[in-house]
Image (tube, rainbow, N blue to C red):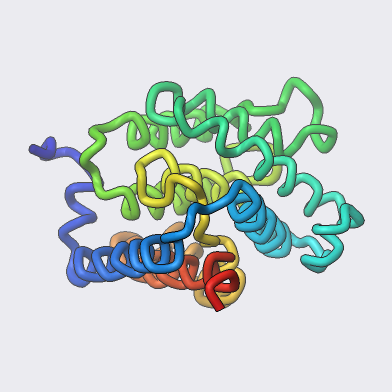
Length: 244
């Protein structure tokens, strides 16, 4: 039973949200089931993570192509995003137990060499620390919370609060993917939500602004957008290419 003050319980009952997330989950399950019947290899997960890192880096301002990322000749932003993706899955088991530690680690991976060491993994100020505490409470909450809704809200909070000194978008998108892994939606991290956000970039960026500035209506619109993006992220999975 949800606590009456549970923000996710309120959000999960907004008009159109339950059906949108149910459809997105069905799409994810279909891709993972229908195209993942063969034993998936670590190489498929690595490819998904690489594609996600490239897309996240472009959204953060990188000018590197996927080919350059694959070849190891990408610009610093893309290198940072790849470093996050490389360390991401190891953090899944501790996400609900030690969410603040995991979020700090994501920023440390992303920003190593870019900001002073004493700012790695640390909130920018007291207000940022409070927002991070709020995200941590969501992540450590009951495991029966809708995983896609949780992932969307964590993403929106981190991207718009910008609690760290740098790389907040990269951290937000990595945390979103990590929730999908840790909550069992996509345990092998085979979908590519970051690629969906890049493909839908105008809607992605405008809905994030709405989440930040648009009150309840902005949050509602972000959730409906996120459901669309999760479904598109499933279609961007490297499993699709392998099945063709």
